[in-house]
Image (cartoon, rainbow, N blue to C red; front, top):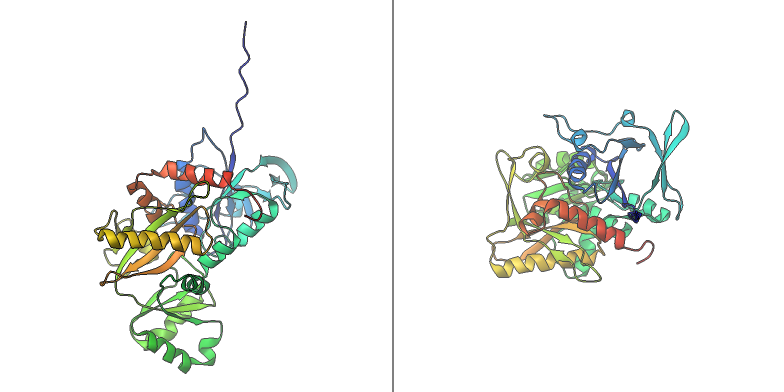
Length: 377
């Protein structure tokens, strides 16, 4: 007598979203390449969704090699990479369809969870998260408010300070302020002490950051930062070691989990941990993990990382960057709610050193998102 095998449960469908409209478009693509290689295809059905620099959504290749750095050429999503996608527009309508030649050619089916590997504005800042909330689709990572706070260094500092978490002092330049009152700005910046770091308030990956040791160089630095964001932050330089800590949401209401901290040491010709050192030069920075911090200081770093994660209401994952000063005190520099997952990115490397391999980390993030309810929580 032949027994009919029970049908296997369908695999959860994961939409890996990459590219985007920000200046970090190519870094998102490289991140996606690493994640696409790590996802267990026996456990998940994977659909790759690219967003072009002008905001068009297209069905792109899920082959990891399509999104690798090729020499000095960074990958990019273009309209020629695949058919345009029609996105769900209401809660309960989670089918994604593709349009070929002006007609709807096929449905890609319901998406169970979105993995939004977008960095910077229009992806990491709560905008994409809001769209997914409206459609009632689960996604990996922080929600709307936490994403927005993590992206905007100005308001991030305000929230962290309100929770008693120490941060570096800064001057905020809203659009037009430098042009209206340069002398007042110079006085405020002078009070911070030199050097200072001038940076876009809402950009990541070290884009547009300039170290200023002479106030005569401040106008050019403000202009460079404003090319990425009209709101600019001038931040006091902190003398100390750059220590990062990876955070992972706890399960079933448990506290956030923290990795062993890692130390960033710029190498080669890099004066600080800039864009090239982060993403393009494999020898541009050294990661020491575990660090040689005294046990008490390491514990402070991990506790502050967990407190920062909870202070902004983060979910899923985050990387918290700190400075450990010579006297052992710790300042939080920033929180990154969608840290890079490139082969040389610090977030997965710290978890690897803490005993959680890359593929298992990706799986854990997907599981956390699939278990999370949609709507208010």
